[in-house]
Image 1 (tube, helix red, strand yellow):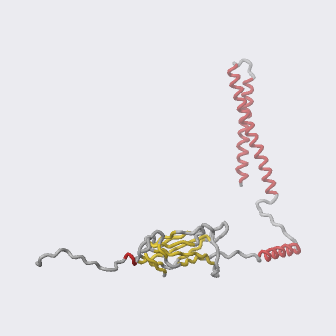
Image 2 (cartoon, helix red, strand yellow):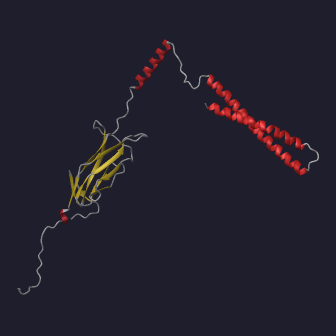
Image 3 (tube, chains in turn green, cyan):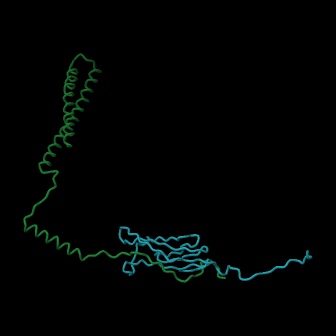
Length: 135
Length: 111
């Protein structure tokens, strides 16, 4: 099923989050050290921002996947992919059939305009060609 | 069989016809004519509605005209065809020999 691959992607992204979270925490902790130089402080801050951005993007996709899986579950609960049919009681089915018959009868008064089926060429008497002097 | 000579052309008319042999119409501008042998006869002088023109002689021989058109007056295409009778093109009598001319040279001794 398509949901298998979607669930697989969800698992993969969840695992990625599990890797990211301690990385973010570790970089954050390093950035709290008071004795680091301003240059290292900047590098740590930039890395932490990048890791947060990656985590946010992954979380967005995870949220979308979970919403998709909920919607798919609702669709399947509605009976998909079985086509819908609508039973009618005897009287209503008879009425519907009668209406269809009337429509077909009405439509039958219209016919396609007859098209030409072939082309007939008729020659006249020969005449001198234009520009040819008559001798 | 129609006949003309090499100095002549045959006016023709084209009539699209239904299966019951009553006149019909074809899509304007869809008519295409062709000669079975353009060394014998060509199609010239088509009218604006393409329903008339001339079969013009080129050289002696036999040729026929073929024509096709779109019978569907709507967006669709229903191609129909027609073929003329054979047209025989003969030599122009005016260009044929009609007499002999003898020309004598100066007298010479008998051998």
